[in-house]
Image 1 (cartoon, rainbow, N blue to C red):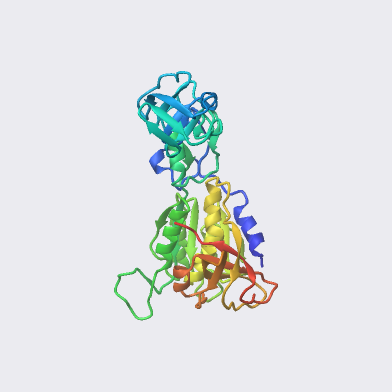
Image 2 (cartoon, one colour; image 1 turned 90 degrees about the vertical axis):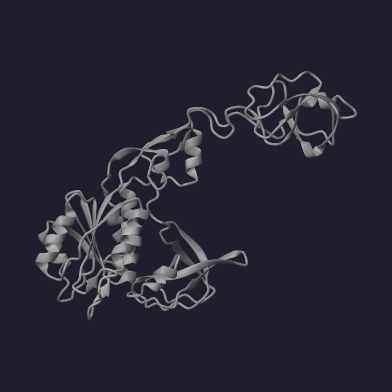
Amino acid sequence: MLTYDEALTRVLADAPFTGRERIALADAPGRVLCDDVLARAPQPAFDHSAMDGYALRLDDLVARDDRTLAVEGESRTGAGVPAALTEGRACRIFTGAMVPDGADTVVMQEEVTRDGDHATFARVPKRGEHIRRRGEDVRAGDAVLRAGTRVTHYQTALLASVEALKVTVARRPAVAIVSTGDELREAGDEARAGSVVDANGPALAALVRACGGAPRVLPFARDTLADTERTLTEALTQSDLVLTVGGVSVGDHDVVRAAMERAGVSLDFWKVAIRPGKPLCVGTAGRTRVLGLPGNPSSALLTFTLFGAPLLRAMQGDRAPIAPRFEATLDGVIRHQPGRLSFVRARREFVGGTVVVRPLSNQASGAVTSFAWADTLVLVPAEREAPASGERVQCMGLIDG
């Protein structure tokens, strides 16, 4: 049985790239850049004032014992290039406005007393104070975002500022989702004895979208080899990734592994030493990747989080496909049996200057509540006993959609 790290390495090995497409800036958040984005012009484009105040030549102010200068003209935003500064004079200036030629310092208006056409300065400032220089943020030709960056909403401001109105990004991976089991019914359908509402399909579709994929939810596959093979064959058509849910264990009606083989899937491995989620089936069919997830909701969501999400990100060329880990202080009780790496659902809070994680009470693999209320996974190594409350523990965040 593979460890988590071994399994993840094999899942990500030679992840097939989905291809490129050109999209509008408004559609860029959540997409992965294929090329570096270069600045066409410097940012800021010109020297401008960081404050409302007065632009001056510092040497002129130093030369005046009374720290008083005559005020001549003004510079405001949108008014074009201001007149050059006359020697021995100050210019009224507003935030964001161009610094007039000849000025080398701006004094904020709170430090100035105005008397008609004269301004008295409370102190002698430092040269260059409150001036934002041309190109100090970005120089022309700089790469403002690198290939492999997943664009955030905040980065759209940067892209707009360098006039990247269109960007080249990875095509969204096409993901087919196949939930298996005679007991399944859609939410809202009439209940029947022994039926179970499918919670995994909608959740996985949402998670796929959050990871940049395009989900396609297929009809349920019933617990027969023929029906599961037929549904899998359809799922493999025009898909970059196929997710199956349930039927990958060793029960009498768990037919997914056999159906995968009959549908042309070459299996790599099917067990990982993690809790929950040990039964995980991983394979390929041509360029299509296949992940067979366990059927219990917490197991399905966990295994997708650990393996499906990094795979989807890697297929888009994401430079950081694996969720980063962080340390936090445990506040609560964790039950852990050594032998498998445990992922414990928890919530984190900032308490007294430190990050604290509190495990949720119901850690059963069939529970949907713990993932619904969690925002963190606490990692408990396979070889150790359960950590005590107050210990520092390794954590990772859940997918942020």
